[in-house]
Length: 78
Image (tube, rainbow, N blue to C red; front, top):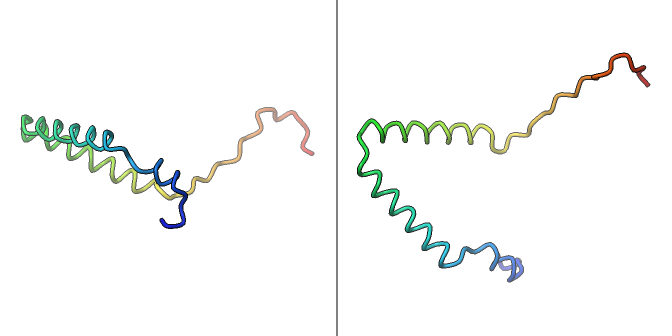
């Protein structure tokens, strides 16, 4: 990172307030998870696993677009 401009490093680094806000959010969610039933926790774990699997499939894969079909077939080809 020595080559990066100072402003880029400052913009990319989260502020202490942002970090604290995320820590509070994580703490609240963790506490709320303790109140769930085993079945509810399992549903959340299953949903998270599905999202992770889907993201792993799509991330980094180029998308190949199909050519658009001609909506006006009466138009002569050039």
